[in-house]
Amino acid sequence: MSYPFDAPYDCDRCPRLRSFLEEKKLELPEYYNGPVPSFGDSDPQLLVVGLAPGLHGANQTGRPFTGDWAGDLLYAALAEYGFSNDKYDKHAKDGLKLHGAMITNAVRCVPPQNKPVGAECNNCRPFLTDQIEALPSLKVIMTLGKISHDNTVRAMGLRLKDYPFGHHKTYDLPDGKTLISSYHCSRYNTNTRRLTEEMFYEVFADIRERLG
Ligand code: URA
Image (cartoon, helix red, strand yellow):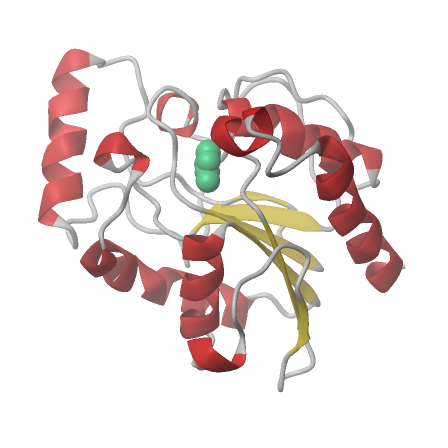
């Protein structure tokens, strides 16, 4: 399922990402290989914004963070803080349902080496702007990593210098929403202990407290 604010499957805004996906369709035809649609509650209070689909995770399964290393930590935290039915099992037909939360990515297509370039972030940003505007109950936006954070700030028409990224930095935005950033729950960040499970759960505890 996809939402009106998601990128269309045949989106061609980014030539490099489009040709990477075309290559992957030949190499890995059983994979989703398209802009990964947002997943979760259609009327969420919480929007989690990741970076971009992982090649063998979200790009394979067609669901954000699903099958990715980062998804193990993210979906466990969502379950722990009451945002899901706790059925995550690394594939899109596991029966997982989110309650009050939706997940998306700043860049909707898998980028080579997991690194989108600035122009790709810019091309994809209107989807995030439309999404934030289309969610009437949205109260908290959680961004994972600096690229996601900066894209979200810009998607909301705000200035980066007024909202610098930092782990567990919390901003009350002019429109009444709250922006909370976290280090990305990537394998690299968790292996190096830049982000521990405890640090990640503290951010979720804060979000849960704000949403009641
Ligand atoms: N999978 C996603 O969908 N997004 C990320 O940021 C990382 C893994």
